[in-house]
Image 1: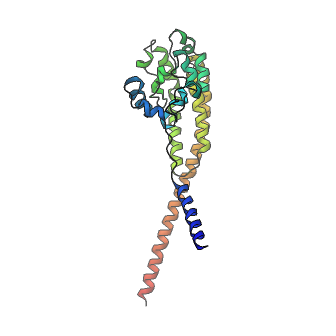
Image 2: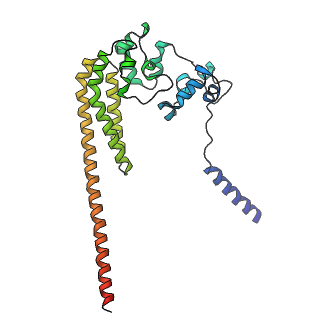
Amino acid sequence: MKKIFIRANLLFFLLIFVGTLPAAAVTDVCIDCHGGLAGQLGEIPTAEWQTSIHARHRISCHHCHGGDPTDYVKAMTAERGFVGVPEHSEVPAFCGQCHVGVEEDYWESLHGQVIDFGGPNCVTCHESHAVQVATIDLINEISCSRCHSYEKPALIKEEISATEAMLSRLEASIASLYRVGIDTGHLEDELFATRNSFRRLFHSVDIDKIRAETAGFDADLEQTKATIDELENTLGKRKIAGGALVLLLLLGGCIALLIRRTYEGHE
């Protein structure tokens, strides 16, 4: 009976130990195999992907190219959904699997209307594997002049620059509030929605549409800013109150010490 009890306890603690072990890393055969190859089918796209915003969000090869990242033998078979590299005109639909709204605006834009004639697709500006966080700096003379003059893109960049700067400032403010323990979830959601909708707007590459609708986004951002200002003001008052409390405690301690010393001096 005693042996059974001891074995039961050992099994119990073994199960607890196993349950606390970290989960095994998921094998990604796409990275394993292509990382060992040379050139454009191997080390270059693999290294580029590892620096990308996709890698940071765990968007790997199979999310775009299909296939099975856990099976070395059947990873690139049709039965596992492998679709390979898209044709030039198929790229927007590839990216649109996740970036649905932007794809819609792309097809309606001048870029989308000339794609069958070699016009730019998503990777023309964003690259295919080394995809980085989208910023206003993607609109620049070197990139845009590969296809046409920079005059119109420069106007678009000028039109959206103030709103983009406001987005960056608000993101920084929200991050600061989060670091001091403020619940910023609702603010992050608001800003995320506004930013995505705004960036959909300038994927239209329609300067008149951008001018007409930017004011509405600026108004939304002003509301978000007002909420942030209120939180920062409350936080500032808390800091002042906390500082005052600390000073009062220190003053009280000093007074208590003086009283004690005075009392001891009269003994």
